[in-house]
Every structure is written in C-alpha cells, then in structure tokens.
Image (cartoon, rainbow, N blue to C red; front, side, top):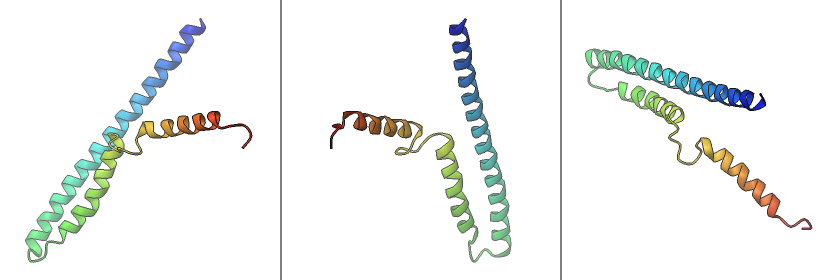
Length: 104
C-alpha cells in the first residue's frame, strides 16, 4: 500500500510541475503577443506622425530585452544558472564538506 501511495505522490508532483511549466509557457506567449501588438501600434504611430525620428526602436529594444529574458526563464535557456545548477552546487558543497578533514 505504501508503494502505491509513493507512486501516486510522485505522479502528482510530476503533474504539478508539468502544469506549472505549461502555465509559464502560456504566460510567455501572452506576453509575446501583447509585445507584437503594441509594437505594431507604436511603429504605426511613429511612422505616421514623426517618421524623421524612429523613437519606437528604444521601446522595442527595452521591452524586447524583457521578452527575451522571460523566454530564457520559461524555456530554461540560462546556460550557467539553469534549473540543475542549484542542485549541482548544493551537491558540490555537501561533497566538499564530507571530504573535509575533521580537524582543520
């Protein structure tokens, strides 16, 4: 009976993690769609009323950095501080502590 409960808990935890990931991806796509719509509107306004200075580029760049960092977080594109990085560091420090001489 305990084995069945453990499997159920493990499956439920996997489901919760997957559901959280799907919600994060959905949030990113919403953010990206709003970015595209708003930027299209701002480009139109800029080119219609003041085409001599392309100020929309500053907004596109600033907000684009935010969208890119959101994508990096959601799709785990951080090469150095990814999801496994924290666990690897904890294991490394625990191993170092275990291998340290007791009387230093």
